[in-house]
Length: 128
Length: 296
Image (cartoon, rainbow over all chains, first blue to last red):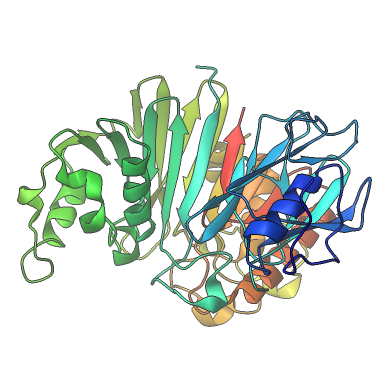
């Protein structure tokens, strides 16, 4: 496994989805957008969103794997489109809730709360 | 028709576009909502949000666009995006524009008018797309498995709400309507703000059991007395419409151009508290640009 370079933020926890954190350290600017997990298994911890699509779910094919029975294997994706970041429900069983509203997808803004099953994230924009 | 229905908000602002950092979250583009089921595309209003919808339609890579356009009314903030709707310029595309009665040509006439050379460099007749007028008969029309009803609203110059029934799903688009002038007791909200505001049966029935009610809730209770007669509703009165109609979800729409994101949050929190007080299972939220809802 490659060693993170000097840009790597040591506060970003390495997880089963450690690839995400490593990618952030190797290839991204220090202030990539971040999903801060504030509730659910493994919280608190943060995931930088340094690739164009980050899939979150309980399956090992997800980029961020969280072991919760209330998550689908591939539950939600966070995608980059130009300067915007969006969340998309990947036909999950329990849905994606943006600030409490069940959403199929949405453009994300700083401070938005995303809930999937028993897992809650706060989205932080790049540089925020 | 059992395919899921997707509703996307492309513009949620009232009156005038409000770009800038104070309105980023709810958005600054004026009224435009996309309703999509399979290949069928319905567009409610052509405010400045329509421009970005047009660009997105091109990015989807379909060889041609066929869209059904419904205008609540022809005030500027509901038509200003049309000249910038890129699909209107391609001969491969077809746009169906709905008039309110067989003898009415108001929608096409005013779309045409805002593209006169005094206002815009390209005229309506130079648009490449096939633009076809269609009309309601007895407040109803139907196409492609979609049943649509219209209802006249209270707004300076008159506006219309639309109820779209797609299979067993129902979406109501009801913007630019001063519900507060329809109350059976106009003064009751001042005497007892918590009391349920009774709305006409015809309106309640029009919205009955909507899976999604998108409604003009531009003002807070505190603001409304200074804005009476301007054609827009208190958000709390929209909540009471949703309660009486037993709507499942209610999107407060047409945000005031003076409202920052924080002020819209404040308005929505008051609406949520009112729903909780009413014991309703409906969910209320602030419509925001870029939000897509799936209605199964």
